[in-house]
Length: 37
Image 1 (tube, one colour):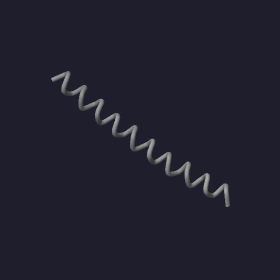
Image 2 (cartoon, rainbow, N blue to C red):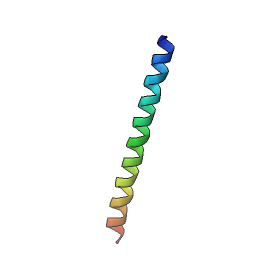
Image 3 (cartoon, rainbow, N blue to C red):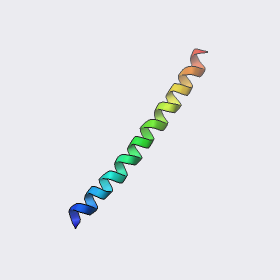
């Protein structure tokens, strides 16, 4: 049971990290485009 909860938390955290990385990339590319043009 504990293993299942741990895997569930890891899965949720992984999704959050993935979302944060995507948002950071979008912000970075947006700033990069603004600086470039």
